[in-house]
Image (cartoon, rainbow, N blue to C red; front, side):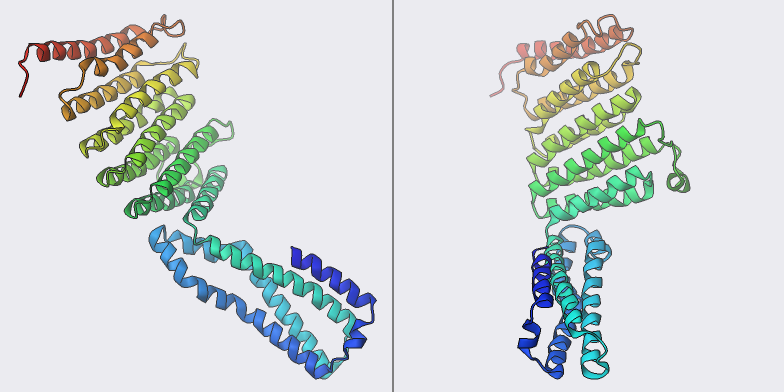
Length: 399
């Protein structure tokens, strides 16, 4: 923008002063200069594309092939290229008049040329800066997220899955290059998209199935999209566990917990679907000796239980199914923690269930119709651990 403003000031000075007379350039010399400048801007777009092609291919290899697709369809880059061509044709038009026709008012023509030249310089700066941005994976992720957000707003499921796949691909390639920060950034963006999608599903104008989802044979796009995102997060978690990337595995457990809460706010029955994924994320990490994820997953499940009860009006909700799933996942995770470390204090494994049982004594759910059944399920798990603790106390110490 600076070059445009500066060129307007110069053009005004050129038009109002007699500097054009003092320069006393011949038509041939002025035409040659304009021809060179016009040709330079005419060939700049192909030059920049050729210059950026190799780095873009590298970015495509390290993140996603969708990077080149976005680059080729970037409207701002196309607009800048149009400005380059417009400037070049303006130069050529003035050159032809200087050399042959001599019909234009040269003072006015050069004034317009100076302004357009400033605009072209700004476009050149913007073009080069925007091209370099595509080499930054985080910028590309933000573009993918923006495109996915628009797909949610326009209710275009096929396009949404397209951009979800692009984000998931960036995350998996980030794991291959051990870029935990980029992988976590992508996973957080997927969680935000899922939250936005579930929030939009609450809208009165929301359709259970749009034309694209019907064409794909999807009758319930909310459940389908929920599973679609969770399955891709599971692939990312499996790869992260294989690489022993604890920050990624821990973050994915937290993300799964947030998705459970967002699902419960839309429909309590939906919360049952992401809970097994949360459990599998933790179990996979534990089986690959990423032991820090186990306690993190148990704490996340505790917070999920509190969130479901505290953030929703549960008076008439059916709580058995989601809380049975939550207790089962917590039980599987604590069992795996015990398998990994036989010397762990059994009381530590029991404490989350005791806290959960205490939660159901609160005023909000103490009189709920499903509370007795849920409490009974918790007691069954606690009795298993009590029996385990008794057995361990009677066993002699293993040397």
